[in-house]
Length: 324
Ligand SMILES: NC(=O)c1ccc[n+]([C@@H]2O[C@H](COP(=O)([O-])OP(=O)(O)OC[C@H]3O[C@@H](n4cnc5c(N)ncnc54)[C@H](OP(=O)(O)O)[C@@H]3O)[C@@H](O)[C@H]2O)c1
Image 1 (spheres, rainbow, N blue to C red):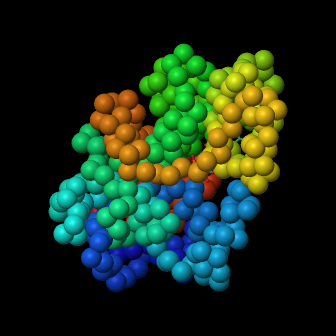
Image 2 (cartoon, helix red, strand yellow):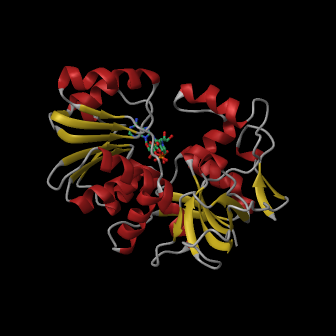
């Protein structure tokens, strides 16, 4: 089969289109013909082995290969068609259009992927293309998880920091569908897409710090690794909730004391990406509450360009690699 492989950590140019052995599914595995996969910030981080949050480096390097990548095919968020299912699997059948995640197994940058049948794989939303379905996963799943954790309610206010990214654009839509008032923070080039997603108010972080205003929020949802923990806490109402998607070690420690000192709640959990959350995501998409916002779609041959676009942040929406 064709796959985008990388033999060493490095720039986007390490990604090459190659012919590799297709996966041979074990007796408990589902074989999926991949049609589309999102190229994410996390894929770029795994490729270059440069992380915004530095403490990820050592555990991930030990897991993924010290000198070179052990698993040569990246990609975690896919949409495709079921090619074969184990006899024990009753919830999916051959030919079903599905979307899901391969978690740390990765491998979705290729024509076929084989995954255990207990992985979160669900029938695709009926109203989406393969590209849209692949682009809904990282953003929709993670945004749903964190917004659920902070128990956002109708009429509340939420500040979303890093709102123009994959997770942020879904967080805006989910918060709006709940009936919250959304302030979105990102740079000026992303303001049109923030409005498209439904933001009520937009702050350009290159012009102004959100902490410089008197505005207070019931919830802060923060996707920016370098953001100031104390600024995020300071703009919360009493009893406000702070969710951080990429906590540094110090943030993890501070999250233990903040609730005792201030009564404000801090959520630093990693998203579990469960099948129940995936089913909820599908329902919300089919109900028209949220949708994927795609910047551009690349072919397998253009994988390096896709990664460059993700890394340079000159994008308004998801970057998808289409696998015909
Ligand atoms: N906890 C978990 O389970 C979990 C799961 C998935 C992802 N994550 C983490 O969550 C983070 C967000 O993921 P993502 O895929 O949405 O990333 P992304 O697509 O790169 O989005 C990040 C956004 O933040 C913007 N940004 C950068 N600096 C900023 C600043 N100082 N103030 C405001 N906005 C700023 C970026 O835009 P510009 O750079 O163009 O300004 C970009 O639009 C990543 O660090 C990822 O590793 C955590």
